[in-house]
Every structure is written in C-alpha cells, then in structure tokens.
Image (tube, rainbow, N blue to C red; front, side, top):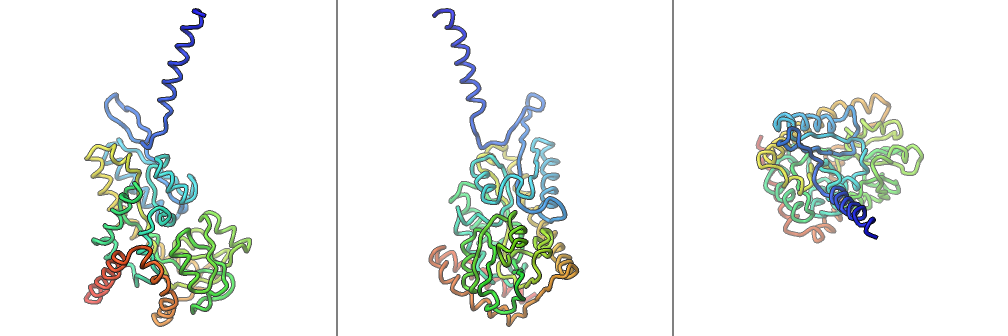
Length: 352
C-alpha cells in the first residue's frame, strides 16, 4: 500500500488545484500583461445586426475610447447579432457573469418589472421629451433601481427607438385594423398588453426568429423601430408599415456588478463617462439611421403610413387600459412620477 501513497496524494492535490482554477466566477478573464498590470477581457453582447447598424457601430466607439483611456488594461470584444444567445440568455449571462456587458431592450421586465413604466403606449410624443425624462431624476431613479432589484448595474440609456407596426395583411390606420393580427412582440408584458388592447394577438419570440416567422406566415406582423425594420430587411417579408410610434423603447446598457466592483476607481469612472458618451452618440446614430431608413423602406416597395396627431389619439385612447392595469402593478407613486416628468418635459419643449 505504501507504494501508492505518494501518487495518490499527488493526484488528489492536482485535482484540488484544477478545481480551484476552473471554479465559475462572474469576473472577466484577466491576465498579468507585464507581471504587474491586470488586463480585463470583457465580452459585450447585443442582438442587433453586426454591420450597418447604429448599435454595433456605437459600441465599437465605446470599445475604442475605453481601451484608449485605460491604456489597454480593459479590452472589449463585442458579440452582435445574438451570437451569445437571445436577449433573455444575454440578460441571464450578465447576471451570472458569463457575459460581462450588454445593451438590451427586451427582457429586462422579467427581472425588473418597474422598467415597464417608461414603455407605456404613446407615453412620449417625440425623442426630445423622452430624453428629458430619461436623463432626468426619474430616469436615473429607474436605472439605480435595477441594481437594487436585480444586482445588475445599469450604466446608461441608449435608444432602440419608437416602435412601429408592420404586417402582411393590410395598412394599419386605426385601432380596429390591428384586430385579429398575430403580432410578434418582445417578452414584455406591457407591449403584449398593448397589442391585446388593440384586438391583436401578441406572439413573443426571440428577435433572431422574427424574419423566418414572417416569411413562413407563422405571424402576420411585428413591431420594431425603423432602424431595425430596415437593417433586418423586414421589408422583404412584410408589405405594410405604420409609423405610429406606439412605444419608445430604450436600450439599457448594463454590466455585471461583481466585475464593475473589481475595477480600480479610475476605471469605474472611465466606464461611467464613456457609457454616457455612448448614449449621446448612439442616439445620434439612431436618428440618422431612422431618417434614411424610412426612405429605404419606401424604396424597397413597402407601403409606409404616417399617422396624424388625431389618428394617434385614437390609438392612445384605445390603449388606456394598459395604464390602468400597470398603474397598480408597477406602483402608483412611480407611475405618477413618470407622468409628471412627461408633463413637465412637454411644457418645457413647448416654450422652445
């Protein structure tokens, strides 16, 4: 038996070492570049296209600035087009630390219902009012609440944009036109409730499945911002678009909290500052893409309807039950804060 004692001890010792090295941790992988300087390798995920889209383009600028300002101590690799899974998987990845950062628009209500308060139908009349509210105290309160409720740190708001209907059946000009249509939505209860209030059938599914589902007739239509309708080439599988802007849908730029706390203070400040710069740039890029996108949709044969203020008011009235339902679910105080902030923003914009 003695001749087996040393090898057995060696094997057990090696197993313990390997187990410790392979333990799952929410930190970014890191290495000592020169024996003293720690290098953080960060995976940044999103579901928008890898090319010709404002989200990936703006995140490349974020990557560039952070890497420059940290002298390469933080290295960021982007994973666009749902390469690391759908938005729900990306959200779970950021929670667990297998994905370090993400820009997400859809699944956050599943872990943080309060965020739906800014996605009530026809809440914001234009982007300027949305920016005023989201960049103000209420918007910051909602971002801060995400950390408290989920353990995920939200760095900044981006812009997915105003969501609009497309479908293959007929133009949508009044609420009744949505009745009976099978419409893909994100996994967002407020969005789904809005479609129900208009008489449609909401069908949540992963973003990467939408094109083929439209092509195969699994769904009649979908709702997304112009930038994504164009970049995802939905004009190839849907004939009608209605620019009703029923929901203003922001991106939340998020980071794993354990990773964030592992940064030196100077890196935390850089990440925060560049996230704000990203927000400004990404919104600008989105606006440019939307302006070009509308003309491109028409150029590809899509019939594009633009609603008047009176026509939008009919949709706003029809979707009032969504406000009534979520007022209690999300909290009366929070809903009132947001509505008051919108009212104040509208008054401020009217004076300009």
